Amino acid sequence: MIDSGISESDIRSCLNTGERLAHGGYQGEIRTGRIADKDILIKSAAGTGIKGWLNRKMIQREYRMYSHLGGVQGVPRCFGLFMGRYLVLEHVKSQSYRHATISDRDSFFVEMWDIIGSLHDRGVAHGDLQRKENILVTEDSHPCLVDFGVSVFRKPGFHPINHFLYDFSRQQDFNCWVKHKYGGTYQNMSPEDAKLHRPLVIGAIARKLKPAWKKIRKVCNLG
Image 1: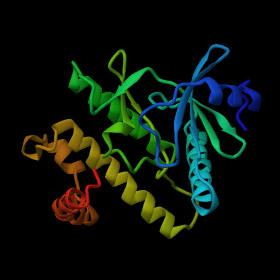
Image 2: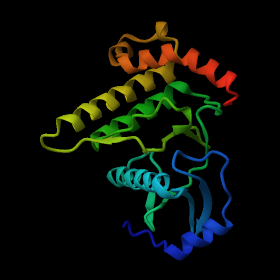
Image 3: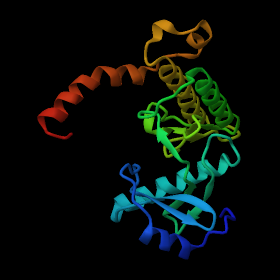
Image 4: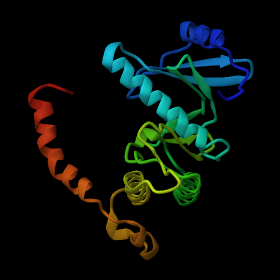
């Protein structure tokens, strides 16, 4: 457990009084709170039975990823995992990349590239940067990367499957950085960025299935 000065009773108090955010995570809800001088977010593993067990495992896995990333600039500070189901993170005042206005995109993406490089230096590939909600823009227009629930940590030694998954997710990080930087308009890529962008087969399949999936959602009124 990370020594954050936060207790289980502090977490229970914030769960009762904190504001519930409209955008939750895959595992459950997210609530805000303040303990001493810390503005925090509490990610909860919701559900019972098999669903609850899986959500707790995902929260615990995400905690391990944050544990590898302590001190990385551009990643929220992790204050610990409590009661096996509450992940407590620094609350970074920000907007999601989807809704934010960025005045200096060149500087923003240079910083984002440095953060991705720092993740990889720690052996962590994010793997889910295609979701704009996982890229935050702080109040002073700096990038911050969040939600490491599907990230991959590269194990030392001989672990071929793990290393394959890490390399796949690492390339996905590069691809998503290029996609966001150029807004999906790849004709304008610089020669240096073009070398980074290597479309993955699974991405091509997903793009082909996307129109059909939209029709199914519309017919079935899935939103």
